[in-house]
Image 1 (cartoon, rainbow, N blue to C red):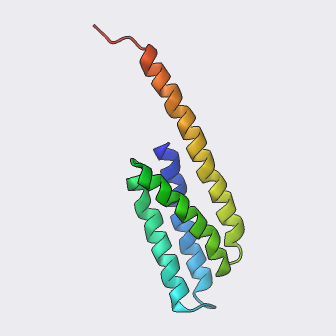
Image 2: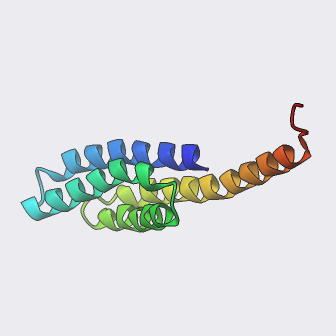
Image 3: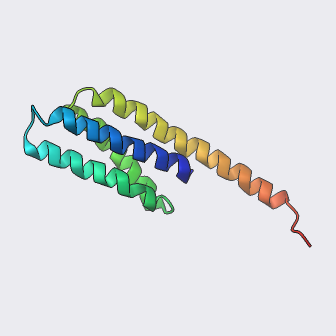
Length: 111
């Protein structure tokens, strides 16, 4: 679950960097600063995914990515795609962890 979530967040970091490049010519500095804050949080959040707070922060960042569409309209589509990938990371990750736990429960320890 953490690996998939981390991959989504790091890829969004790069996407946010490209979005800030698109926004730099037509918008105020405050929108660039807001994008930079989101990008930095996207890069730091994978380290927090061991805890529930990391997943909550990651979900909040998904909303902020979609919200950045006010500055760069194409971010709405990209944000929705990555939001879907985030949800898929949570669902697939939970199934994978459940399968691993079941496998570990049936495994006999070496004596």
